[in-house]
Image (cartoon, rainbow, N blue to C red; front, side, top):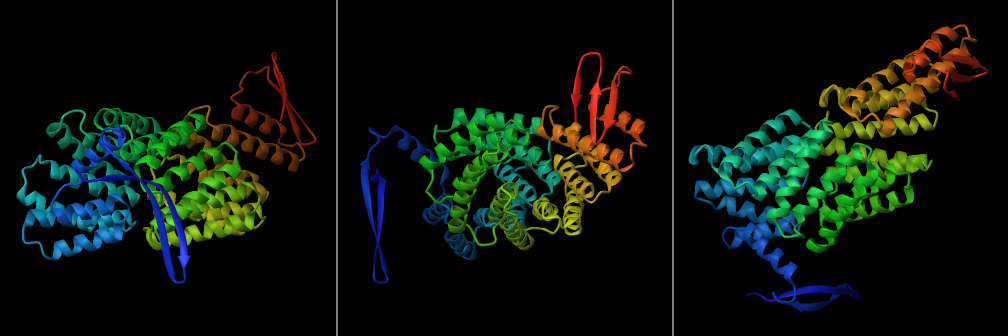
Length: 482
């Protein structure tokens, strides 16, 4: 067996133009490091092929995508066997995916699939792998219905060809969960993610990086559902595993720091959120190409925090940097572009530049109408934000129309106790009260009935008294002020 060391400390010194790194190592063995032994055994099983193929796969696992791509390009150029060519095309697709070049990635995967369909039987596992990989590209490109179709074809084959606790089945359930999450179907996403995690706990060592991925995805769904305390625990478990199993600047670590930042952001702990987002961005700048979509995501999230802290110029700068990257890296109607436009619009709205705000928010809505299902929660966010701009412009009837559209979507897509439901209800009430005040109470009866509708109060003994910009709502049981 080869000798294995743990890296305990790295000390860097500069001698003129030369950088010297002093590395302190500790010898390990099978007997004194059971977790390391289990993890390395699993990696040996996963990293297969000839010597050069294994080297390329190991480089990819370590996050050295550019080096892995060069090696496999060389292997493809010298390949004479069709089955080898299919493998090399597949792996080059994988490297392009990690670089965020999804259009190039899908072409490599399709080249691999074309060869496989000629030389393999219809339920061969390699076909399932190709279907899965093509689905992954469409998922990244925001074409979720196409992605779901490819993933389901992959899962059908794997259910036939594999034992019920095989890790590849877990990957299929996980990827289907990703699509449902992006489509806003959170209960279906959570079910798929939890099925994936069950399989991985049986099939993999306790600190395998793929387990971290499952915990991360479960946290993400809880976060979208507004259950932030439930989200934080799986995110932190994911990060613990990744710190053990991965190099310190691996992109997956950046994802975990980013997601922990999202939870703190939603919980209103902005300094903690900013710290996590900035740590994520530091890793991404080292590990990823300069225009990778993940960098745009980090800049967008940093912009969100600065926005909430009232630092509008910093927020605008971050949102614009995010948009620049996404315009280069993604298709023109990718949902992520909508996030950047939405953020820019939000900054302008808070700065009182309403025409600029409206333009950005409407562009965000246009993209989401093309890219997302009609009841996706992000569409509601766009409607809500446009309503906010119109309210600040004093166009209350237009504002109310957009708030109602947002409320209709959120009622269908979110739990009844989600914070968004309360927020849109309050905004609708503000619009109604402002409209009544502007019309000097002439619409009081109409406003009163509208308020009853918004609050879900329909009893005839409910009295709404409006005076000097405030409404008092009372019935036999309670009295409350707005």
